[in-house]
Length: 204
Image (cartoon, rainbow, N blue to C red; front, top):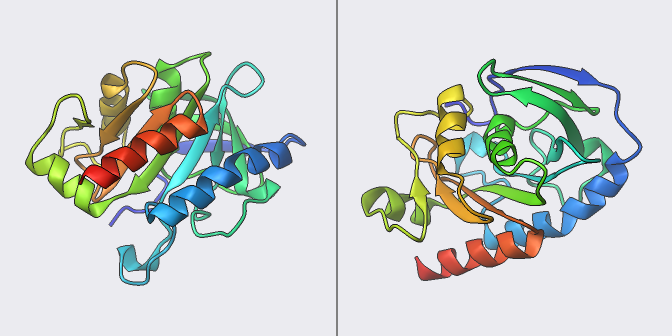
């Protein structure tokens, strides 16, 4: 199992004062995602490892903010729970960040979307939705979601490249074919991401 296993190289610098505001910005979406059951921690799933992560950008004109590893089950985010991704290279499987904790293991998956939407307001929610994931893998429905190649495993360069290729338009839903139960919803703001994910979950 590779859930929560960081597979990229990263350099982590000192946290910035803006982390507190970023945490407060992400907190409401975290709470909604937990209520939907797509983020959190379940003793009966994934060896009780917390699942899901959030990001938004651009941050101060470039880069993006993302939740730190293993924070999806927290009732509220604190400044040490968010990381500023300053720059990244999917090809080199590496990134530079600022913060107090390691970035999410899915950071390059988020980076793939932020890279395609460079300079534009973009929010990304990575969650786990077993019923949706199973349905999408069994019967792809163009217009509702895109399913990545199941041979591309989570946390890998291949997955990030597949996600980048699947990122089109201002918002969308990507089902991670090679990551059990994994889905990515992205949009120009938190409300758009939540509305998109909720509508698709209600239809499955």
